[in-house]
Length: 109
Length: 115
Image 1 (cartoon, each protein chain N blue to C red):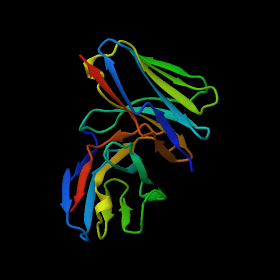
Image 2: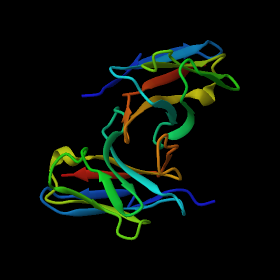
Image 3: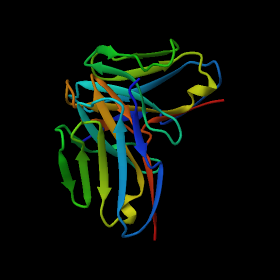
């Protein structure tokens, strides 16, 4: 069945370093969404990408959707302690939404 | 404005008991989703409603799981004869959209522990 793979599973970075998480699908996606879940919290919608090759920025966050619409990435520049949490990508095919397992980001002070 | 609310926030059930989990979506949101999230995992899709119609229930793990949204607003996820493997956080999400892409707003979840 359709899978959405996310790597890495965990990432520890020093505060101020950059961070990237990657999302890969076995099939073409109609769109992809990114969510952030703080420890003990619930997923919070960050952004969605629809077009092939699309790039969107939100302050220090840059989101990309691959040309083949099978992969995506989230890059955070100069991480801050408030960036701590788990970042999930979610792929949309038909009406089903498939979440990756997430990348847990730890920030070392 | 009010977000998605879920109740109860925590539920402890003995194996074999039935449980009912409630979701109040954002007012006016057409689409409603239920997910199961195990510890350290991503949300796993269970079922999807568009208004009162259950359009996809392919993610429900067994016939012990049942969901309804009779008036197209509040939804209830019912689990019959709970098993230990049902222990997880059950998340509800709603979306204004009736077609993809769905920008989903999640509730705080119900943490179910089956003993």
